[in-house]
Image (spheres, rainbow, N blue to C red):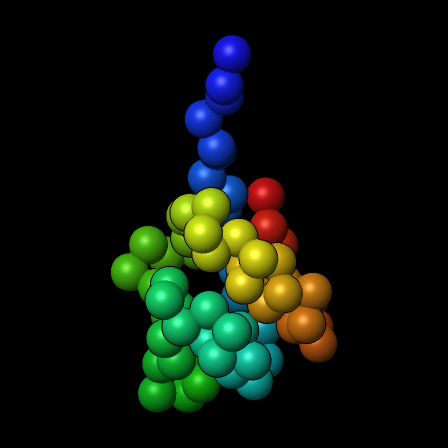
Length: 72
């Protein structure tokens, strides 16, 4: 029996974020930079990540210098 791929969630910890913008470059399909360089998504703090963007989201989380992103 096949199981459906489950969407992941990218959690943004605003207290750790310094607005460097690396995540917005790696995951431009889901994040854009606000006027101060912080990641913005209309989804808010918890951004739904479809299976086809999971690799980019995982890269953004692992490359974040302050570990402000977590893929759940």
